[in-house]
Image (cartoon, rainbow, N blue to C red; front, side, top):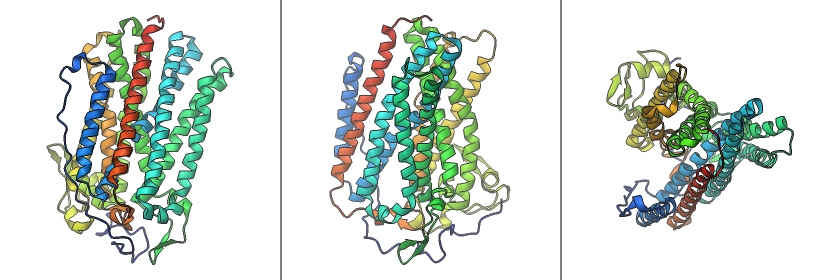
Length: 496
């Protein structure tokens, strides 16, 4: 791939001002350090799960109150979006991947008539319903936040990103209908039609995620318009929807959802192998299905990441420099992995030649740079966690296809799976930090600054606290419901 010219990409009309002065002057973007709570229950070992959740929620609330007291409106709005997206992406990731695990278990039941597969399907279906409901709530909150916190952005971008959001709504309703048919279709629908309903839940969930990511991709690589006199003209919503970032962001996110969910489900059932030894066969079946998805996704994720990084290098070279922490423009640019630097590898991965020039962030105006440290260390954390999950997937597949493999006897491997339960979701969160923080200070890259899109309404610390309370409530509710589902397994007769 040839090197891009030594300037920021000009995929919007030439002559566009980099600093939009037609919008309301925003407040300072300087971030405050996050306060850390130090409270802790004295004897947490003697508390129930509900009591622990209650203590943590109270502590989180106190931290939020302390943190919000010194916030500017801009920081409050940005933090509110970060909290909302941080919670929603977990619910959405599980909503994308979990229906496919459910569909595989269901297919195994139809083929083998093993009652454990039927019970596994029904158990996972309840989890799908829980996360669908919470994801609907958190997603609705996000859509309101876009309009209430960033009205200038929505005023100008609405005609361009309205199409993917409308298609997302269509996919959402299709998912809701299919999920209702699946949940209430046992012994009422023909078996194959019932299975197809479950599969449609997963397919529509993937499509819903892709349409939302199309809108987010447009913010990173805006296309489908002419920018003239502070207005979007000659709007092409199809070109805007299928912008240069849509495909690579969509693929990378969907694979990440399968990776994170697969390893989380496998880790939970690996832990339950210890807690519920009488359900050994049941949980081993669950682990096998989950790791087919999680392990394969972890192994192909580096390929989707390479594709995404090449597109970032082409359209957002400053973000690439921030991701790698590369200050100086240079040829034979090194790839950084923790404390290790591999000379020339970044140049090769980004542009296909070891001697290709990679721009450093010092080549760009300081006022256009994102927070380099946040982007760089988030990217490094995402890469290292992804490498660990890929290694764990390889290790499982290697042991799985050996003779006499019995996961219940692999104590060390089970412990690795249990410890890895949250790692895929942490990697996903870090990836979104790279995507969103790496675009700053722009809300529409190269067109509109984040501070210029902010609502003039004062007191944004209040909605920040209210929405944070909403998400804390959803977290406690989901935790309680999932614990109930796990406890219900012990009360039902199984053969394992």
